[in-house]
Length: 69
Image (cartoon, rainbow, N blue to C red; front, side):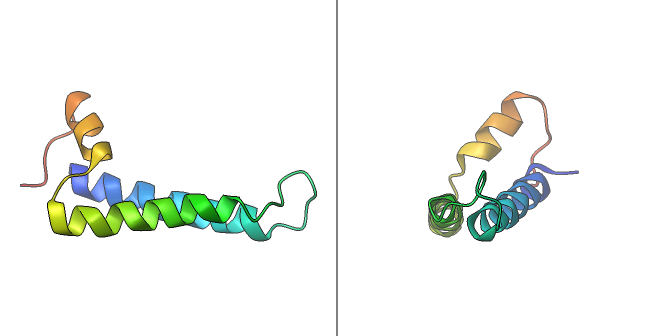
């Protein structure tokens, strides 16, 4: 699995989890502030599309995951 596949899977999981926590009915987890995490991941994905710079890919490369190139 390449680093870009892992980055996309990680982003998808974080987005879905933060959306679920943002709309959860449980008083322990329910907070609309979780949606800020969704926005952060979305903005990071958008900027990486233009700049080709992704912090998670740098971390994955340092731990030995092969590049998608």
